[in-house]
Length: 123
Image (cartoon, rainbow, N blue to C red):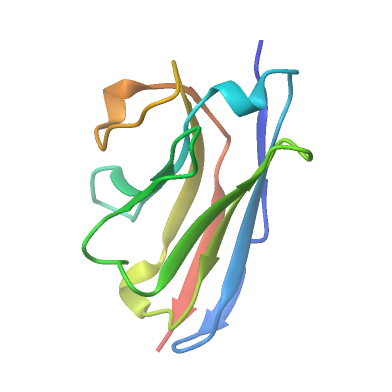
């Protein structure tokens, strides 16, 4: 069973930065695409960013240019650097692992989910 443990969430002001981390259990981290989703109160869960096994990345239009996803295969960890945060970025952020090396931007594609970490941006 794969476990994904997120950290780094918190309360910040608009314009600030945060870095989320997600540590994954298991020995084959480098074989899988990783990603981040988020869910705001009263809204559906939405794709934020993903990175495949070649470190190619993809982003939602709403975060493009502000967020950066990266991975460190030596630490079994994926990161989400979030800059220029806005109040609309407030949500629970979930780390996800794909079934293989590629990624897609829909919820059903992803195999494992973390428990989530709260990010709150005050305006």
